[in-house]
Structures are given as C-alpha cells and as structure tokens.
View 1 (tube, rainbow, N blue to C red):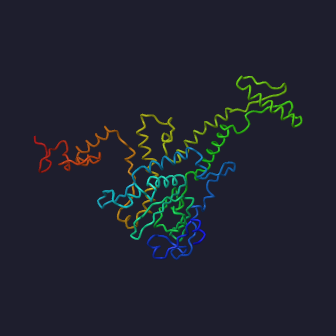
View 2 (view 1 turned 120 degrees about the vertical axis):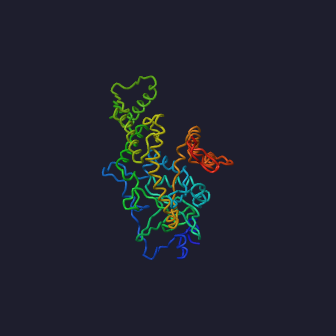
View 3 (view 1 turned 60 degrees about the vertical axis):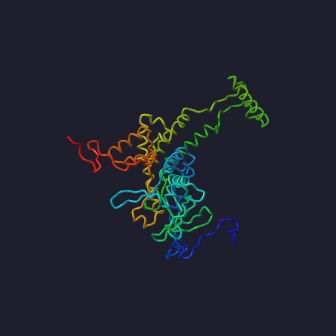
Length: 426
C-alpha cells in the first residue's frame, strides 16, 4: 500500500483500455492524442485572472468573496432551492410530438429520490444549482456500470475540478466522494457552463460584473465598520497631551472614565483646556448605508430574480403577487433551469437515448399551487370539456378510478349514447 492509501486519500484511477471504454475513465494518455492540456477558465485554471477591476482600490471579486454579500447568497439559494424542489423528470418525445414522462427510467430515481448512497437527490441538485449560479460552472459525476446504466450522481465542487482538453475531447480531474482521485471522460461527467463565449469556458455573473460587485462589497465593508464601531468615535484635545507619558496616560484615563460615568447623566465633566469633538455617523455615512439598497437591486438584476423574491417587499403588493410568481417562473427559473436541464441531460443520458428523443425537464407546475376551489374548478372544466376523463381527473387528486370513468364526456352541445356522441335532437 502506498502513502496515499495509508492516509486514506485513495489513488489516481488508472483503468485498462477495455474498462475505460465502458466507464469513461481514462489514463494520462487520453485517447492516444498525447497528454491532455488544461482548459483555461474551467476548474482552477484561469480563475485568478477573473474578478479584477481597473480600480486598484476595489476588492478583487471572486465567488467565495461575493458570498459575503447577503443578496448574492439569497439570489443563488432562491434559484437553486426552487429548482431543486421541482420534479426533474425523464421525458421522451414521440414522433407525433407528444411528450411522455418515463417514470420507470433509472435516472428518475436518481434525480428525484436518492442520488447516491446516503445522499438525497434534493441535496445533490441544490449543490449543483448553487455552484452553477454562484460560479457559472457546475459538475456532476455519473459513473456507469457494465450495462451502461448510471449508478449514482455526485456533485463535484467546481473549484476542485480541472478540465483537460485533447482536441475536441474533454477530460476531468477531481476527487470523488470516496476520496479517490479520478480522471474521466465527458461520457460520465455532466458539465454545466453559463455565459460561455466559446461554448466551454463558463463565466459567473459575479466575475463579469466585477466592478459592480466590487463597489457593493466595498460599501458593505464600510457599513460594517461603521456599524461595528471600528474607527474613531470622537477626537479629544487634552491640556496635558505634551507632558510626560505618565501624565498623559493619567489624563487620558481620567477623560475616558468621565465619559463612561457621565454618559447617562448627559453632562460630561472635563478639564478647562480639554475639548471633545464627536465623530458619529454623519449625513454622508447615513447615505452610504442607504445606498446598499441600490446594490441589492443591481444584484437581483444580474440573476434575473424579482426583488420581491429577495424580500424587497417595497416592489410588490399582495394584489400582484400572482403575476410576480408567473414572471419569476417565465423570466428567471426557466432561464436557469434550461441550462441545468441541457447540461445534466448531456451528461446523464447516453447519445443513443438522446437520439431516441429522451430529455430532462423540470415540472414547473409544482410551483404554481392553486387553491382547492381553483383546482376543483379547473378539473371540472377539463372533464366536462371534454379534455380529461373522470378517472384522469380523479387521478390528479390521488383518488381511485370508478366504473365507467374512462369515457370522455361529450361537449355541452352534444349528447352521449352507447354508440357514441351525437348532436342533440331538435
């Protein structure tokens, strides 16, 4: 056993050629084209050049530093959390254009129940969605068994994964949940990227709008210093300042004690030549605190999140709450969700399955929860439309079928006979 084995860190995966063809893992030689080269902008390579502003005094913005801003965390958690709680189903588009959900597909269990041993699917999907919205990159390791079926889905931290390039092929170096160093091909890795100008190099909105986020972080740091009392609260002129050190320390202690003891009485007793000037929050300081509201608006715009979803309730009232929910679904969730659907589908579905019309899709209707009255009215209209049979309407509510409930009701201007629907007489 080598040193890495003794420390429990695992070893780099090196599989023979036959095993590499089956699982997608490759050795250092790749596909015979020589050692793969690092792909700048993915993993750790190229990240250090991002987030820099032309203004040297502004902080360098990185995804980790941006998490110190509550609005960034709120926007990422809102998007990732809402997408993670939606069912992500495997669908197949038939030749007629009808889309059917394949509930018995192995991926349906991995995406909606248990992604890996001991890891709920919701946790895995939230981790991928949060990393993707924060960093503009996301990775999910999906190894396959001998039959080509995906055995588990594991979220990989983007800053711990390096993308290698050999021609048009991509390989990924990372450490999996079992602490085993791996180098695998794209056949077993879902690679999500956002704002990729070349199709591969993902970018985060935080890194692109570096100066905007830098100003927001600088304002927040200044506000934190003011709120925490970091800095001078007052300046005092002491008559014994130029004396020896012992006399100055005694005068300083006397003034400090007088300020602490007499603060509640409102009368401060000082020496004849002493002078105190307060350095409390000025009008400019208060304006600095108020300007953070503008930073929240800009960050919300970067992520396409409605301000009301970030608890900026001054932008919404109860009357337009339903319309805001519709706009949030149409403008924000479907925007980010489409990247997750296509990225995960590319890595989790085989090429043959994608050619057969299989794809992944979030079921957004779970977000638009109607009231009991609205739900019953909609089902009644659909059954009497006719669009649904009575048993299909009962199935929506989780009720058992009834005898004769598999026949569509005729339209209101038609009557139903045993031989079928005919026009009303007269």
